[in-house]
Length: 174
Image 1 (cartoon, rainbow, N blue to C red):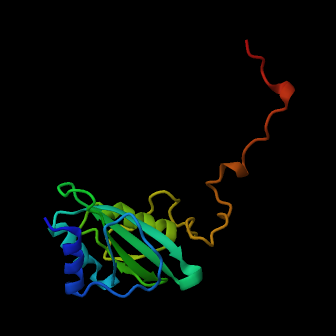
Image 2: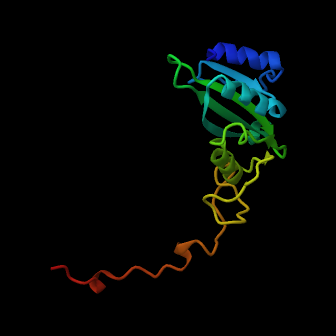
Image 3: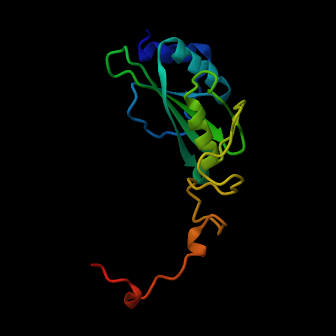
C-alpha cells in the first residue's frame, strides 16, 4: 500500500500532472493534483494498483468564467490509517472529451454517465453513455449554471393537470 503522498508523487513522475489552470482551494483530500485529461486513466491505474478505490466524480460548471468544466475524482482506501483520500482534478474545456476511467474503476461508469447527462461532459471510450434520469434525447443540461427551466414536454404532468376542485366539491370525511 502506498501513502497518498507516494501515489501523488508517482503521478508527477509519470508526467500526468499539469499546472493548475485556476487557483481555487480544495479541501477534503490529503493529496490533490491537477491531471492532464489524456493521462487520467494512467493516473487512476496508479491508485488502483496501490489499493485505492473510486469514491466519486464531481463536476463543477466553470463555463461562464473559464469555458471549461472541473472534474474532481476522489479515491480512498480501507487499509490505510486516515486520512487517505486523494483527489485528481481534471480541467475539461467545453467540447473536448475526457477519457473514461470506467475500465480502470468500474464504479466510475454511473458517475461518468451522470456528468454526461446532467452537464454534457463527454467521456471518450465510454461504451454506454445513455440516459439515466432524463427522458432520452433531452437537449438541455439541468445542472449547468446557465440552466433556467426545461422547455415544456410530454413528460410534464402540470401541463395537463385538472383544475383543483372547489372547496364545496370536497367529500365530507367521517
